[in-house]
Length: 159
Figure 1 (cartoon, helix red, strand yellow):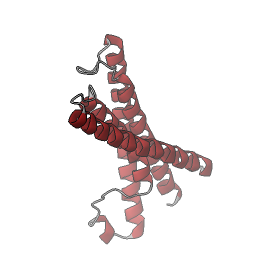
Figure 2: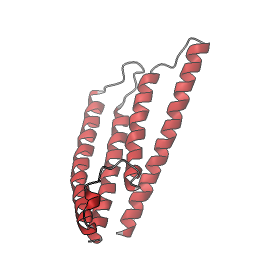
Figure 3: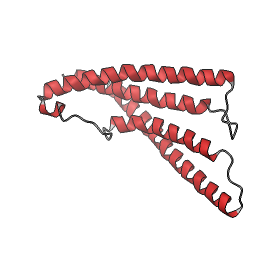
Figure 4: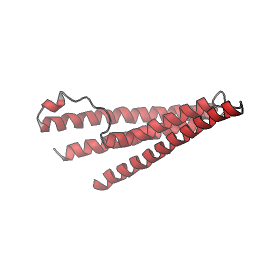
């Protein structure tokens, strides 16, 4: 089981690194667009679309590591008042429920991406296919699903 947890942790870190670079690319794109628009009156075509797609990928890829490190906002002031065994049981149950939801969501987003690919839909301004970005968001959801599975396994093993 330790190997499984390590693989999930490394995958989450890798996706988080890609998300970090996605933020950098988005920032550079916006700055270049502002400069080109101001100086040469010639903006980058489709910058709004690219920014939206990159932001979706950044969020999708960063959320797995965020959940693994528990750096997200969690409202658990009711659970904190319970004994540690019950806290562990409730957290494990929530991880299992979340796993099912994320697996379903990941599959549905993947199916949507396949449909977008099949019909050949492209962005309106830059005319780029956006199914790869949909697939990347699906991958991020799947990674988050694996993190939740890992947390559930840890909860069951710790009981």
